Image (cartoon, rainbow, N blue to C red; front, side, top):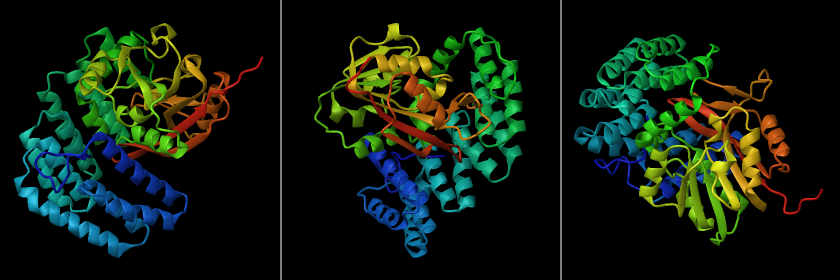
Length: 434
């Protein structure tokens, strides 16, 4: 349950623009990385700096407080927690919006280990909006973390009974329970999905998730499945990624800052798999032309409404003939390649449209299982994880040199479980011989 915005409770979460949200999240992730690297003094200095951010959302402040506590500064952490709880107390009785106020406040309370108060807000949210997917997901995840799986399944059943699209509802919760390590519950949701599976595209989608559990899939209409999946997800895309504490765009933002590339607005930039335009804001200072491409028309329509791009086009990354014409000086591929297994074709396509000296920045989910011989593996989320060795090998085969940057950080949370991601920045050779 994660959100950084609400209209009802400014002390809880403030309305700030997406670029500022990305900056704050990126700095928190940088602090986490410093702690992992053992640079505790620098991490503490960064945490103190973040806490001084004007208008810092309470949720973000609490997460920084947790880092400060891990660093051993319990007095500072306790002060942050006390101030945050005081702000929450001022507004809790007045919160009404289930998704944008009650759920974020409940998560903040859970982070403060005030579970009984958090559940009161969760119950209020689900009673107000039992057919809201985000609310149902948030409450179910909370119950699982409180070791109340039966109650979580009841919330799931109630949501699926109320929603018109019972197939997608069951599939969605199958993914969620899998990531919460509730295998029996996940399989029960897949069995429920089977009962409501009516079209070839739905069958392909179901098979896709069954295959991730080692079961045979038919490979029917996989392209149609992908289009349908993202078209249906489009309207709620930003909200769902916020709930997952998505860090993909922030990883790219942080990498660009570290590379210290000049923000001269001279580059022709391609946001490959732009979705709803989460990267547009921080790419703009580098761009003379900013192009966004995606497989989903609905995603592109939302990007068009936001107005962040100069050009938008429907593109299948595996089909070069669908790409925009011309060469690009920078290509960003944030949280897109996870939907591909083998990346040979896509990386060759991207290399072919990148100018000499141009930059490719991409994220994938990190696979660290040594038994994954192929270098990538499909998971029940419907996404693949890729090993570092596979990424470097496949980039080299596509004509790229050794990456300038390979960084690992939390890419997102799958409702409480962190998913480690890999950020790669590689520069195409300026001169080619042979």
